[in-house]
Image (cartoon, rainbow, N blue to C red):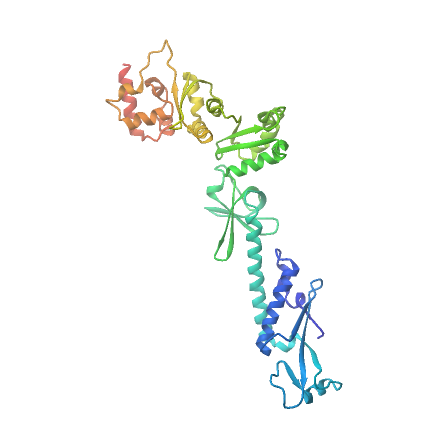
Length: 411
């Protein structure tokens, strides 16, 4: 055979997706040079010519013609008597060039070469996948669900690469089945036992940021910047935005006409409530906006300890805290201040400050109740046992004891 067609000889190479042909041919050349060294001792006098367009490879071996009995290395030299049998025109001092065929290596060597090639190409492909996704951390990708397990979901990208979506990176309301399309952000890329491990996420703040960039052209163009995002995935998110153009209302631009822009994001996040607020350097105003939709009466800041005591009318306390305490928790994360809410006493309402019960109720229990805005007896008595357990970190028995002590005050 006049040349070696590698693509025909090694069908496996047709299946590799992430390796460009020149790289693949370079690997093939290296492997064949290794075969030459094993057979002939060295490859210095061999030319390996790769045609990257059609997959052909030719191997030419050159040896110097020596006088009979004067050849010191048969791998580099050939004696005249042998040379003239192959080419009668050859003389001492000439170079004898021969083409090496694939068959001359033998079946076993060819099978070993195939195995080595596949192994090397697989290794290269894994490196290429790793590099590709390492550069894409923080980007949104869309894939297809291939397999759903208890702790994670296997997703394939459009090239068939495997991506992992752990349960911890899924929104609680997410439910996937094979064949579903899933959108997520590339969260983390590691090399584990020579295999790229690509973790994608739907709970990371970056996912919400990329969704805003897709929906709001002003963010994508840099006219509006997202200062910070905090999330309780599937429940609530707060997004602080700032405009570099006084003519653009950043909140209005993000929400869109009648909520047109934000609705798509909310749907993608399984109806996660999203509060978009104007960023400001004025901490009092920032905290006030962060506690939206609650209306605040006054705020006392302790900049040294990074705490904020927020006073509200009784009907605004539950709004400030939010369902499951998500609103106040996110406001704290967004502003960097630990936020405590307090009810403003109604002039006509007889109530007792929770601190008045310090002889009967442990201090840590009082602190926990105050942390979620329950700083008076009636504010606590207005809630059910279940609601109190959910809002605080208190056990049901502890809550019952507290209610019993407070009720006794009003009997």
